[in-house]
Length: 418
Image 1: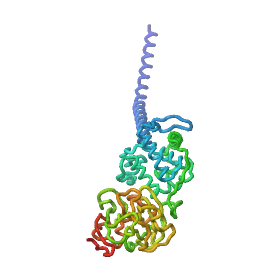
Image 2: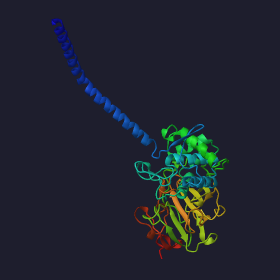
Image 3: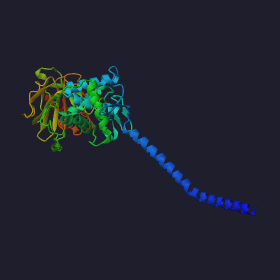
Image 4: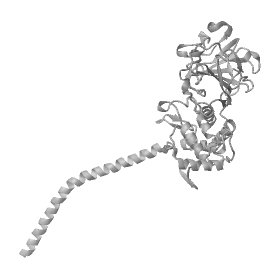
């Protein structure tokens, strides 16, 4: 009996010691458990955030040979997305001479960026549209007032590809699919070659499938303009000092109206407008009264066509500033060629209505840095009022703002309002 009591006491002592040890251990376990739980919670949030940042427009994936593709209804010929992609493919082929692989690359990147949705918008990144152009903020404002339609955004893309982002097309010439994707991503999207946002494997696989679905089995004939800078960067850094604003004359002669202002069509309202529209009172596509004249001495550096500008010519003046004359009726109506030396007042072109226009006129613009810098808000653009000494005072407001006005007469100088 006595032995049993001793055993019980011994067991109680052991249990008491164990409980004391557990209490001491609990003092450490509880905070460790809390910290471990917090770490797991933070890790989960990071994973969710990283997935969200990877793409604002996530797609389910479809496995095909060579990797996964961006899925969706784009393969359905009756879907809005498919029809929009077909419009873009046709435009890039016909307007720019892009090859099938060039087009497949552009469409695949459009799917990656927005599901090829012209209404796509990412407010946090301030980007909009099919190819997610900057729409204000840290990414600039390339998008501007572009409409949320495939047609308008393809026109914007083409305009940039022929002007401010011409390096994209230059590097797409004769390029294979990999190099076409790289050219668009680096030069048009502004990504580095190694940027994970490119999703190279998936984008490449998607482009291959696009090539099959849309039957993009044709070569290219990219022509970036009859210019002296086809294979160079679009910015000529040697001309940054620009013009002196002492150019002679105006691009037209006789009676005329200013029908489009700067920097917007109505001066400070209306759509973006990167130059000034001059229209002679008597205007036509072939009459001498609608001739266009060089406003300064210089050298012809570009003579080409695009869907926005129509037929246009660019002259680099003797101080390094570029002047642009747009919408000529045809290339033949531009009566000078690349490399020609011209004098102020020399007949060089003709008013017209090719490209995106509402009537016969000459669009005149000035850029101090870039011979292809003719999109709204492009670096180097200056007000024509700062360059043309004889632009009527009645049409010029503060800070170089130009408003539609007229009629005026070139024979009566800067104060020629009627």
